[in-house]
Length: 320
Image 1 (cartoon, helix red, strand yellow):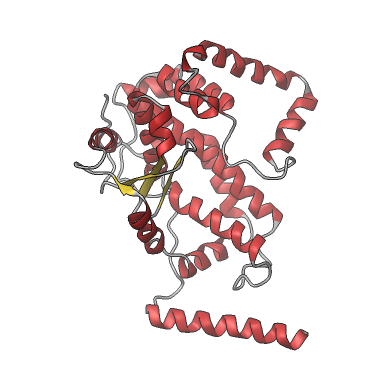
Image 2 (spheres, rainbow, N blue to C red):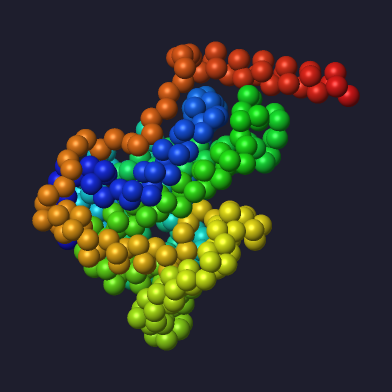
């Protein structure tokens, strides 16, 4: 497998990912969301949960998976090595989280459905998110959406800022970020068919009927999907589906679209230059770095949060 020593995420980051992040950061309320996120959300509880309710991969736990994982970490030049967990869940899914202590979780459904090369593609994809600094924004997006929908106005100062435009921008960015992570998988695997077959299987694969699935037919399906855009009304339908017309906004592009984007990139001069070792080099840093406005101890922070919450409760009592 190819190794990209010193590679910067900017070398392979999809321009739509970059544009969507810039649009998100420019919206009113984003900076406040960033500060509040750092104040109220911490990585440690999530890591504690994973340590207690999943299997941490290592030399003596899922040793084959761990070896592939370490090779992917090396190939994308990621340091320090993130933690990797396997969660008991039949859904073929995976995700990357964390900023100070990044980690990846893959469901057992991934291990049951995919072969080793395809599992490597999933690991490289999630490491691509970490390499690009996506994880902090993903966590911010999840927190902001939950704050807006669950506790409504009691959002510790963000209620008036988490508007529809900001929520939409978060979802739009999350979809575009997947395109960069797909490129990371492509660089590590150096095998377009394997990356595309991974997408096909996660879309609707079956162990029992795997012999009846055709990657070429899936590629043809992707081409037919792109051809739908010749009708302007179909473009409207696509936009509405991504924007929540069916009850919820989508966090990932449709797999057939991801296949199309990858096929286009693999034949590009940019991809060939990276393969030849001509790529941007820089320390691996996240795309988004947010800090509290002023440092304060955990005790002071907790005391202030309690006081703010009590004030909100008192206001509600007075209004009754």
